[in-house]
Image 1: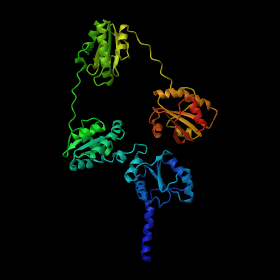
Image 2: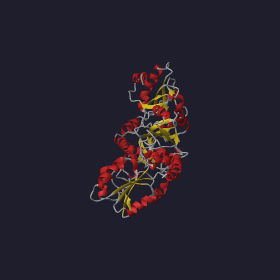
Image 3: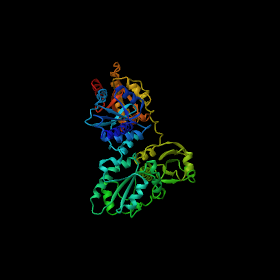
Image 4: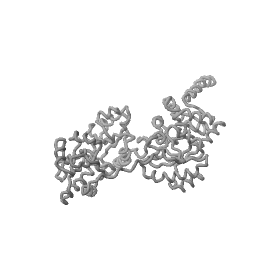
Length: 495
């Protein structure tokens, strides 16, 4: 027995040492802070004891080895005398263990994915991204396909009809459809006639061959397979009931008849071309010309208004003509008048271009043609907020952290210059900053997210304005109070 024990010991110790070889075991808080300063992508495992962490430690170690150079994995045994202080500092008191992620020196989030090798690897590759669809518990009845090999296997072996949604994680239309698609998969699962709803992320580089194979040029692309072959594109509505109904009686999408060209539709608008434009202008003293493209959504919206206005001019004998030029078919005249976007509307007097016109409703067009006058110049552009002298500190990707870590209390408004709610809040925010200008512990700061996407992305800014409170540049908390001066002042008096 003793000999057997002697033989086992030398193997068990190196095995344990080897398992932890790529994990940084940390006990000291200063050492932990140094790691956060020098490493940008850190996943930390805080455990009540090493034994308590044993269910996840092997997976954690494998991830540490395979993420070497891309991420850092740290283990903290909170039962250790020194490490207890570290765990207390970072507010970690696990019953067994917990995982926390730190990005660019700051706490990012508690790990909220499955505790598997694949999930941890995916998380560390994109720690601020959305949870992968295959890990969403509401999508458990969707068959999630990983590769072209898995796709071919599913299509060939699955005897039931398959509806396959090819998507990209960043695609807004895909995100909106996913809950309905998953709900449809669950409902169809219990039907007498079995069907399969599947999904595949084809934004991954390794799935590029699938995109080529099925000519996927937009997202989502939804295809129907039957008998091992692609039969046709999905032709139903993009909601749960639409998917369920369509799968009960799959039919190819109904081809919409092509829209007739505007020039072929009877109306009182005069359609001009490269060949007819100059002659017509010489013969008519007052002409409003709309340059358009057939595919342009804003043009389609304006066309009925333009048609109606042209009819009104004719019926009321108002002097002047409404004309239109398809810039895709008459590029020479469009280029001559420097048409850069659609619709572009210009007024011509006595055959010469006079000025541009911006209104798009029938009433406004008719009123204009009754007495064509050049509109007043637009108001001067609003001065950028950062150029307005105030006590608000304007920060960006380069100086955000260095500036905030000097102040105990900071209220930061993440904004966009075009945002109406931001414009309304700015003067109140500025006045509140003025109230605290003598207090060196307090700062009011602002970040233009159209210019500094990096820092806005880091703090998961999804809308404007987003206002967050920081303590020495750390521990960001969403500000959920009012947006008037008194609200900001009251909050910062006791944050």
